[in-house]
Amino acid sequence: MKKLKPDLVVTFNLSRFQKHLRTNAFVNMVRSKIGVLTAIVYDAALRYIENKSPPMDYPLLDIPGLINDPKDVKEYILSIENKLVNEKKITFSARDIQRLLPKDIDFKNSVITPTFAKPKRPLENGSSPTLKKIKLEDGIASSTSTSTSTSSSTSSNGTSIDLNTLEQHLKLLLNGTNTAFVNEISPGNYTIPFSHLTNILKQNNFEALVKATLGDYAFRILRCVKSMKLCDEKAICNGALLKEKTVRTSKTFYLFRHKSNSNFNYLKNCLIYDMAEILNRIQDFKLEHKILLEKYKLVEGQEDQYLLDRELKLLNDLQLREIKNLVKFQRIKSLYSLYSLVD
Image 1 (cartoon, rainbow, N blue to C red):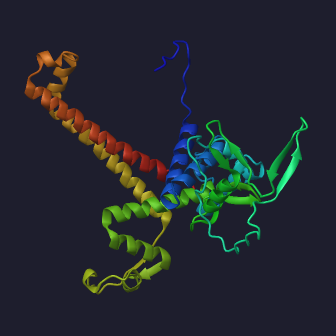
Image 2 (image 1 turned 120 degrees about the vertical axis):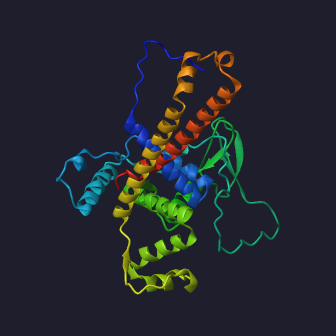
Image 3 (image 1 turned 180 degrees about the vertical axis):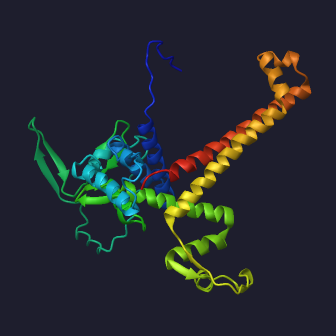
């Protein structure tokens, strides 16, 4: 471990840190939907344009009454993103991200594409492909095969990274799933739709939360309401294929609809409440054992000599309890940070 110099000034760049968290969130989404190797390629692409990517905070949106309509907010964010694309600040190609890929991973044959071309007929004499002689600079003739070869870059440890393979991974990101993780602005040049992916990321996490906390039935009902826009209980039962026993009988008539922004804001308020509950819980059990904690501060470093075995065990339990609550707090905070992204 290296020690920092005493006269060295260390600063923390919040904007870069938030962009890095956004990169990790996008990469994890690609990993779950496509695969590990494609996620590695996507991570290299995001790191290549990360510093010049769209900002996380927009000061104009914080001014009350300046931009109120959600459509105007979306158009404003897209205008900033399109400006970066036009200036080629967030565009990349396969050759750009090739050098950022890890050297210890072999991407050869990582994408299997079906071919419908007819197999070539073998040569009648069974000989090898035609050899072509090339005269080198020193006058020595060298024989090379006329068979086609793909352009590749060989790293220091001998691992070959094929540009065609990278292009195939980028095509997977483009149209391999229902979500376009990249946009091809010109042949071989790509960009990342940050605003669109941020919304998709929120939707996926919201559906995962509903499925994990409320069950499969709730997840199916959510999907049904989202697809129908506006529906009643009978339409939901038919659309979600619910059994009659699981649906309550009611004489009232309700209509349901799904509004993403309202749901996300409600979820953010719930997450804030949960974080406050965790902090209050930590504060409460510290107050319950205030005498023991004050005694520990007095003998810190020599607690084995001055504290009883029962007190040591209780102190250890309190520390573990605080750690578990802080872990829960950080998980909820990371989820809150996700839904605080502007899309």
